[in-house]
Length: 112
Length: 109
Image (tube, rainbow over all chains, first blue to last red; front, side):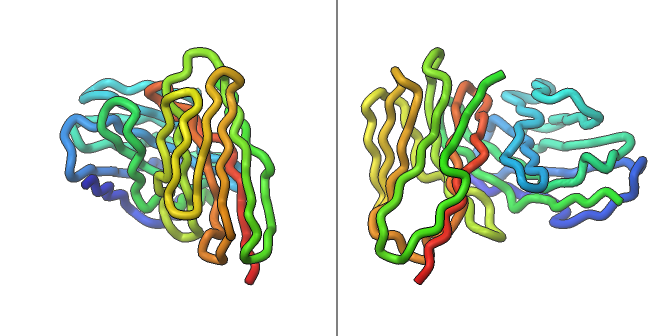
């Protein structure tokens, strides 16, 4: 079965500081990888997804970026955080086709 | 922009009541529809993945139906228990998964 490792669990960062959230996957090769964000009082918003190394699709224009340097590693970054970047970030993975998503435990980001 | 809607937004029921929620999605270019349960302080967990019009799936007291022609899916919980309290999410699958805003269920003893 797949295990999604995501860290850190919580993060408090000042406005304008950089961000790096990392996600690694065990138990499957060549997974489809996803970054979601839940802002306060809202649903899960898809930020990025990747079907292979170096292949990133961006869903929402913003100051965030994603990279997939290895098959089972997915990184979410920002050069300068905004207050509106606060939220709960979830990494997810699945095998190909219409298989279900497996989620990490999430990162609670507060930008102050 | 794909629109996936869920109703109601929240639901409070008594233990033993049966309940159901709705997920509406685009009826064109259908690939799959997912249901997830998201309990507080945990990660979302998959309940069902549904692909065929008329599909019915069941897991214990929870079941789901799918109508791809009219673009909706129902999730049913029979005899709700306090441990069923969670947010129930549906997701429209087109390789990327677009989630609805969820239905928050609270079951009171």
